[in-house]
Image 1 (cartoon, helix red, strand yellow):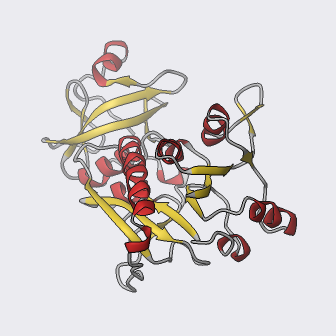
Image 2 (image 1 turned 90 degrees about the vertical axis):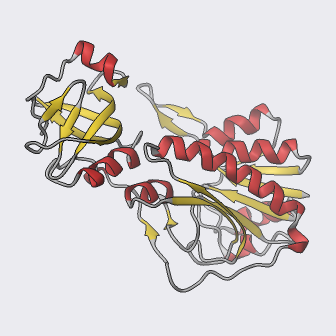
Image 3 (image 1 turned 90 degrees about the horizontal axis):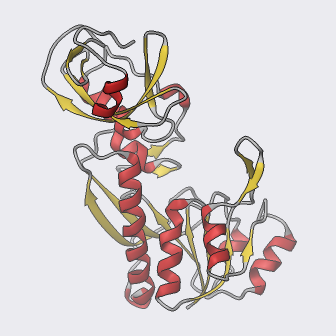
Length: 302
């Protein structure tokens, strides 16, 4: 099919690769504009932009799609369909109506659960047993369109957002190829009115660990916020980012290290820290970390 691809971050790249590998004609790639990044504030391309350049594809990065010029440029590509995944701009009705077969969105949850900006983080933080991807017909609402195809997967007991992100990206790439091949045979299913939840954007205010909370909640917080923004606590006044964990046995005062290398008591139960990062340092697995920064029994994290 002749299509326009719309995506920006790393999550979207495997989908673009899959579409090209499957022989679809990608008339144009739309992504977020380059933005200053790093110490030198040099403009950095989005991951999709960089990959599209490598593939020799035409790239557009408008700051808005609401203008007549932007909509006319989009229409000039005459797409049969648009594939959208983590693009970052709201598509006005004029854009949604342009492709012959509309716009298909790859959403990283089992809709209507976790509509919105951060479905992967929220699924882990809520303790969901499973998640997946949906291929959805886009409409004017926020992730409200009819679903054409679902693919589900279990969430691992120790899985972080980074790990689940990569699995769902690959799953989404597989699903869109199936959906495009089966498009004429798929029946759009309206989303039910029950079971709707919203995945609000992650706030840095959610990242500080309160060791008085139950171990299950702290474990999900650590895994759900890894790698960004990263759950954190303090060790002797120094910020310590916690990037991986699992539930453990033990009881003690909240924040107390119970046993090496890093089993920490919570309000109820305990967690074992598996990956840590001190401010200004690189992330390290717990054994490597504690060689340089020991956490003897009785140490208090706050």
